[in-house]
Image (cartoon, rainbow, N blue to C red; front, side, top):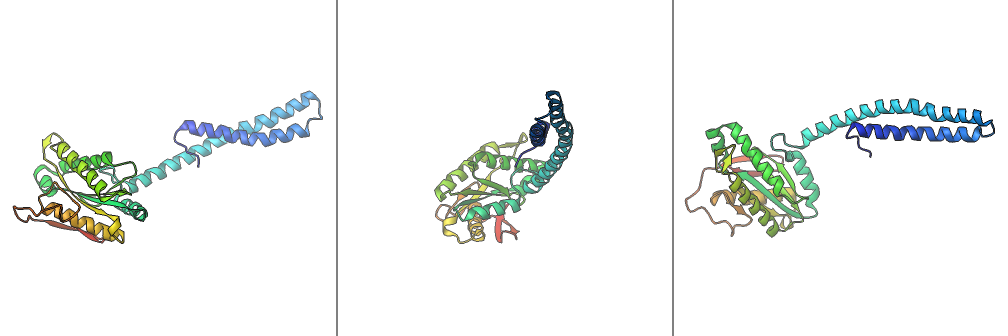
Length: 264
């Protein structure tokens, strides 16, 4: 389907439509008036070419301009629904649906949760908290391979689906995300926040459904939280319990996903 991105596109398509409208008429008049004197034939051809161009071109511009306005409005509405307004990553419903469609081909899921986010909001205010969420969304988007999906599925919770990725590949990407946020999160809006994230990793190979995959990734995220935070966990063996002892958790229920995410 043709795209109307600029007014130049409108002019180009209007010209093409006008030519298409003119050619049948000009062809018909040419063959039906060929027996007339040359001057009469030329006049008939001038009318056959000129009238469709004079009528079709401005009418096409008006019609295509209205179509462009409608198309732009629909695109803005789709973007508003599809993307999270604050962070620019996929909104929860779109992320879940895109991941569901890609699930059958295999891959890995990362659940990414900001550490001590409530403390950041309470200490520094929600505006700085929003800046922290924007930073997380930006780092996730920049770190992803082209085929990766990034979504915000809760307040400070993000998810990443990596199609066809093995657990080892997913862990490597998760570590890159964790390190990038540890480095870039030292200062948020010129404030020494020390933003970090905990990440749980699960692979589709051992999970029968998207709900099961989410639950397994959430279990690994819980392990990352309880073993000290600012960690990537893909198995129990990889994450030893925090020797300092258990920390207070906030449990947020994700009803659409049908799983629990422990976060703070």
